[in-house]
Length: 138
Image (cartoon, rainbow, N blue to C red):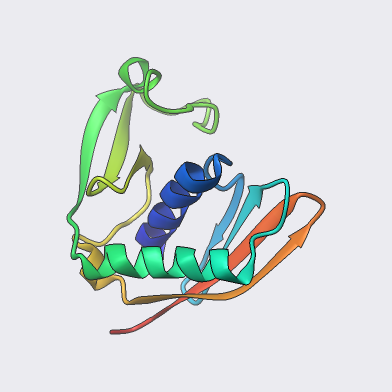
């Protein structure tokens, strides 16, 4: 779930310029991601995101990590969500060339371990696009 969330976030930020989800709730059975957008995503756009994520999963991309200092990370990432008591060393998770971000969560070693990505629902209200997704086992 968590690695799939990285792929969705990376593509949403690139495709729509909305940044990463400002609110995320990652669970075992489903994940909810909220983005600030000027208009709702169409059914075609949602299907395109789903196809994109499944393409990255099928590509069997390596998921890796690096450790760097907050000072070095500042040039590449928004550190505003780091807790006040975060250590000076931070972890950057890479999903191949598709996404990189600061993260403390658990991830698969390769995207082929994720399963099939499926957007189960979405809604748009007051400038917020919510995407809910599930993973089906391979």
